[in-house]
Image 1 (cartoon, rainbow, N blue to C red):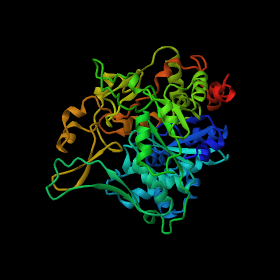
Image 2 (image 1 turned 45 degrees about the vertical axis):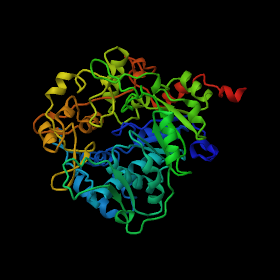
Image 3 (image 1 turned 90 degrees about the horizontal axis):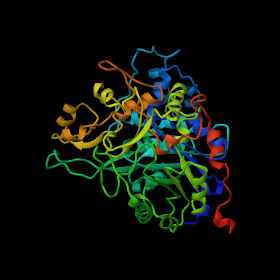
Image 4 (image 1 turned 135 degrees about the horizontal axis):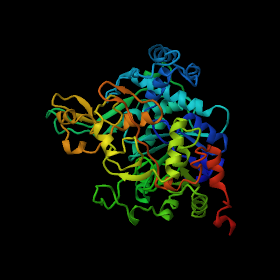
Length: 491
């Protein structure tokens, strides 16, 4: 393709504010970054839970007014009637839960998810004409289509998908935009399935189930988040022309989920060890002819300059933005994290066991959180959100879900291996706790946080122990400090 056709290239931003879930990359952060001329990105991960919990907290940002713009007011009435609590719930009361989203989904669940995502994107797009994208995890296929449809109804500009190989997703976006049924193939464990039950298995969404008269929409631009030039080349071959608009090339020191090391090596504690094989060949990426952004350790002025000099359109930065005043973390959380990082009381580890997805996950080692082994062991396992469940067919031929972070006996009863549960955390509950929406559990009380961040956070360049705060503008000003035009252009 001609990279000059890219929306992001045309607007010439050099910085993508990375998508960080659950709702750390909130609409407030994405909006502010877009107002400043860069690319703001909201997280679609667990956004339906985020919205209904926000309503139960008294709707502090008046999300109801934005939901009133959604074209399906019947589902909006249902959401508000069921979940809104004037003045907010009591601190010691648990949140009311949504039903866990099924692999053969209830239409109502799809409608709720679409409306929730619509509201997040629309809030992010207000007050500017900049670029707003949405970040999704490829592992969470049950949620992708409804999230994308709701985002498109709010005119999202771009979709970024990582933590998987999003071959099919690129092909489904134009279908949804045209009002056509879309589907994603599921990787299902059929070891227990009866002989007469066979795949393939799909998750499906029909826009006509979401809206009675689906409109013709603009498909957003699509940017896969990949860890290697090899994967970029594979996707380029498999995905039809015109459906990819660029790449995010993410290195192994990025926050959140990382790709496993290609050498499959681990240290004595079982944590992944990366080497030069995990560094993408940027010449090979550039040869594909698309704009690309570099992520994972590129969040300094020197690295932004290097990225531009090497032909990149810019950099994607997440961790620095995660601690800004506009992020989804409550203010007292960001201040605690900034102080801990500047005083050497927090470290970053790449943990090979924590995430139920099986992907390595960056953990901020901080006292009082689930990163502390003794605290992790005290938590009573429960799986009441279920976003990271994976599909299997049970002995009765039913398509079900299980998660290695759930109670061990439940996981084994569902055909899982007990060894897979060792060291697994419930990221669903931990990451919602991170944004001030901790559930109150009957057995173990208030859910605790498990923070994530890239390796570079230990050298945090902004804020201080005495002044533990900074803004999205501070991040952008810092990144551009001393950056000139690319060396190639200057020559």
